[in-house]
Image 1 (cartoon, rainbow, N blue to C red):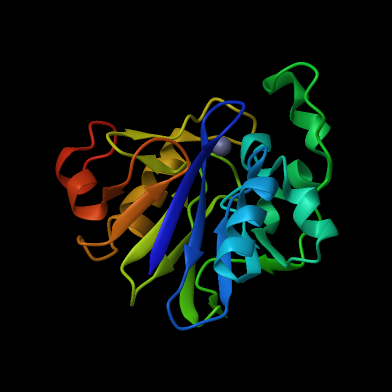
Image 2: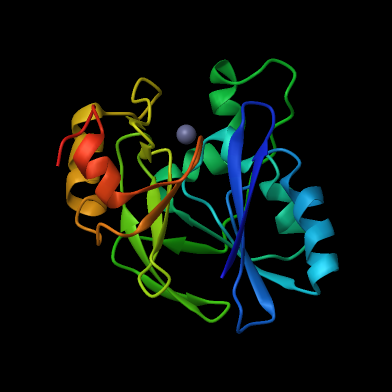
Length: 210
Ligand SMILES: [Zn+2]
């Protein structure tokens, strides 16, 4: 399994391109600014077709290029809890960067906690991890021992909870019940910053103890 991480503007948001070995497809997790052009080049080089765009949540820095994937006919997956952020992104303009053009993102597949979805030959479990935003989810592939957690959990930190719809107690519960219950060896890929693992955060995360 090849995982390419692109850290993109304007605030250093991670976008992950997964290239599974036994498939002609590929999966993208989150769509920051410039992700479409970045990924398009790689897909041409590798001869892959994008099977899905998985959105961990609806914040603008993770979804700015979402409309481009809509235009290209790529199925988009997200949780309905962030419906408003996705359909009316300008609602969050007070929390973004002035002058940034935000376009609505159409969601083809609404996911919820405990959903199991098969994409590009990989089986995924969706877990709801509200707290940073109401519709935050993580995508876990047990077989590959990978979890894409968006802004719920970072290496040595957690997502901010001061934005509309944020709630620290809820985030803490999400991390304890939905992330710290994954196998400790699970590789954790956050929306910002470096990769970590479930076990590492359980032992040393200063914000949410196991
Ligand atoms: Zn966020």
